Image (cartoon, rainbow, N blue to C red; front, side, top):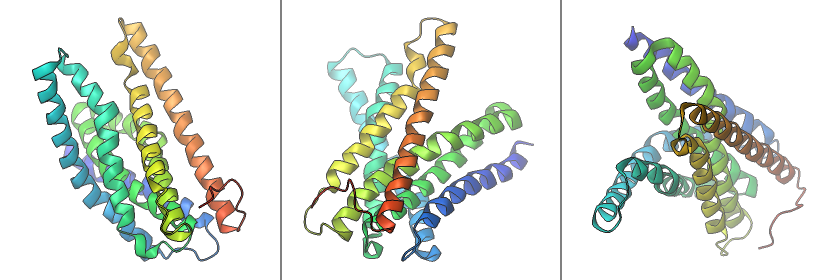
Amino acid sequence: MASLLLIPAVVIALGVTLFFLWWVRRIEVNHREPWRVVLIGFLLGAVVTVIGGAYLESFLLLALQGLARAYLNIDVGLIGVLGAIFIAPVAEELMKALGIIGMRSHIDEVEDGIVYGAAVGLGFAATENVLYFASAITAGGAIALAGTAIIRSLSSTLLHLGATGLSGYGFGLYYGRCRGKPRWGIYVFGAMLFHGIFNLLASLQVLANSFTQQILFGVGGLLIAVVMVWALFVWLQRKLHELDRNVYTEIPEC
């Protein structure tokens, strides 16, 4: 039964991420990026950045654990939370930024950076969702899969789209408009910071002292996180629309 559920799990993971990718790409009307190239960015995020991010995250987490054992009196569980808040965002957003750089030859306009950033981020989200869905199936079957799919489709999927889209905006400015002036670092750091705040909100229940507080902190943190990622998603859509229609308002000077 569990193995049969893997098929709908993969279909849901790909279906949701490709839908959001279609949505982002369709906003650009002028010089719209070709599907075959956008899908290369998606595959780059789904395979290369996931593998690279996993290795980098494991290395940094081992370094943190070694530091904690040698110099700090930190509970093992707390190390995991710190890793989720500080290490995972740095490792994942750094590798996804490298994925965007891999698409640099196709970034001719500022808005192209957002599109390819979203493609890389959604590819990463697709693979990550498959792994989480498989874990949910093992733990609770179809019901757990349904719940996990709904929550991650509305939160973590948009987190990766938005955070990497933000990095892509920075690279779009660099490759498509402000060549030679590397402002992209600000946006990659912003993506890491946004990702870290999201993970912090998703981990609030560890601060709870009772079951009731766990429910309140867990639900409250998740709702705030969802509002955050949707707000960034809306901002990126608006920015992409403005750039595509040559409305260069609120765009940083080079």
